[in-house]
Length: 330
Ligand code: UT7
Image: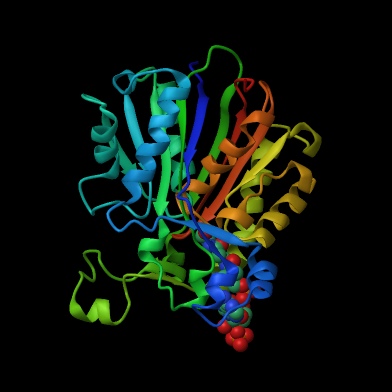
């Protein structure tokens, strides 16, 4: 059986730092509330009006190619996970391919809200395992600031912008992506969604006036189910693979709320020192959280380390992936 392995990781973060202090000047909130409820201190914002998700995805892709010392034309497939594509169509993967000079390389976008990256990783893995492709670039990128209402304190404190990318190649040994389990339950779709702009409620003066193009969220409803499902699927991954807490080097959780992450780690019996956590600096970057964690912790990962990725997002969507890490970082 051919196994897929992550062989390189990269990221891009916009420079502008939006702090809790600055948010205090924008909406009725305060640093204490944001920190205690979510764990977030600051987030990055792509302020340039002429730059979108494809810009961040392109920067992450370029640095990954450079790091792995391969050409864009060496790629077989580009998958972009995003909920904030540059356009409804064409796909952002299409634009990234053009930007990096990946002539003749096909690609598509995957949209599964905060589970977009893990779903995209799953798709990319299958293309490697099938033997059809040798190099699949999986990017998670979101310009959440483009769909956030900065007068709505319920949502504007939570999200940030960013991009992360991984390269998938056939594993040459026993390491790589070992197991995964994806879920979805569409009955939860109205707890977290963008009301207008799709074919049900196309853009109109009314939808704009009613602010229906922004993130709409029932935070408590999402929280209640997220804290259960993210832990359930992570535990399922441990049980299915006979992994005990001490066998796991790192838990890589989606960064939506530190309390959800803490709850997941506690259920798994994993100590906080083994949890990748950067929500305090980047907030919830939706499709980018998992690759951003991998990028930041890459130097601490060694070949053979067991890591579990787990996520929960709108839809509802959730899933977990068990990876035996494939390389020592130089
Ligand atoms: O990534 C995709 C999945 N997304 C998530 O997983 C998000 C899940 N939800 C959450 O993380 C949490 O529900 C939040 C962080 C969004 C909110 O935390 P909470 O403990 O559930 O607070 P709450 O919604 O119950 O609100 C408590 C109070 C409310 O006031 P009242 O009605 O009790 O008077 C809110 O209006 O806090 C108020 N509030 C705020 N206060 C200060 C809401 N947002 C803010 C704010 N600053 N930014």
